[in-house]
Length: 123
Image 1: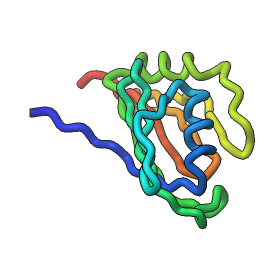
Image 2 (image 1 turned 180 degrees about the vertical axis):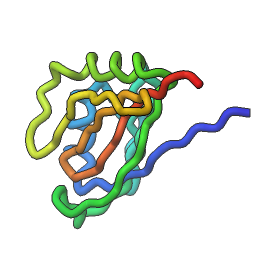
Image 3 (image 1 turned 90 degrees about the horizontal axis):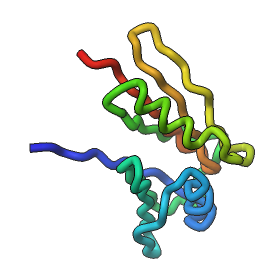
Image 4 (image 1 turned 60 degrees about the vertical axis):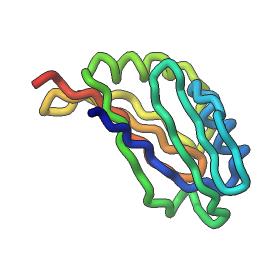
């Protein structure tokens, strides 16, 4: 049996959140007063958000990790986003090769959520 982990992150403004992640190919698949669901169909990544009007980009300490099966898949995902205009203070980092063979990069969204992406070498 396979399981899926889906992060639930805070958002100070669902419209800002949805607009930001849309730049990276995430489509809104559900929105309610107290919940937002975004999905990247091509990568199979789903992000959920709950409203928190007090969340601040500079003090938010919420993070999650999205793991790809291989380093190349992480590089391919980044390549698909590399030309995207990411407005400050949001951020898209460059991929880094880690000493253990993984390739990792991250996105910090306008509300300070850190979403790390990585691909690990086959065992």
